[in-house]
Image 1: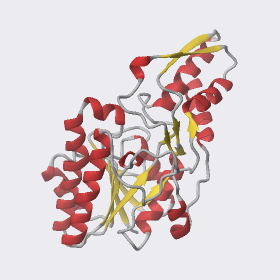
Image 2 (image 1 turned 180 degrees about the vertical axis):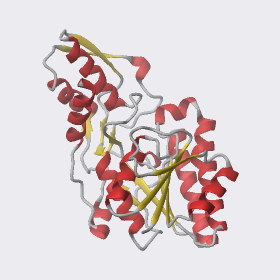
Image 3 (image 1 turned 90 degrees about the vertical axis):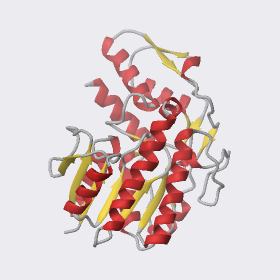
Length: 307
């Protein structure tokens, strides 16, 4: 049975990815600065911090994993504007600690790092892997830097390092600081009050490609199981909807009258009008296709907050 070590296992995606590997007969180890109740009980968990190079090296040496997936990151564009230094520390230096530890062990594990659609230039067309990179926020810049180091360690040390560029994804368990969980929670709260209400939002005219998190973690597994680590894959639904359309759908799940109120303080310094994924490459090469829609995820989150 192959071993998978997931750094950042206590984050939103960690529990879903852990379950995905468990469902496919892997022995799953998780690590993070704290544990979450969402993590499957079958996961062997250890507290650690990827910014601590000694801890990271010790953990990788003890577990001796076949696969490492790093989910530990500042994963919010908005947060990255507020803490750019920490974004670089965690997203780049933390990843370097993993690569340094991996190159020192006898059995070289496969490593997967998570990039982002935020690495690309702004484009009104669906973005494929040949679209130029030119991030316009600290988060995207950190992910480009991470990929450059991954290539360096792949070339210089022969490590099998996989990089993937997921587009937005959501689902039950995502923090409420993210836009769609925030919408779902606000609408569910109004629904439970049995009174009309107001929902405060930022720029809802932008169009975004959102996937169900279950589709994303399935793509991660399929990619890291593949033979060629040099191919960088986009992962997304291939459909971009405006935040307004998604919010209207969430409101339609409620029986209460809800007014939408625009809050200028919620606008980002830069916000691309459209971000949409072209997932042709992963579909053609690895046979991955989305099985869910963002509306499936929205319904699940609304029902979760309504309970």
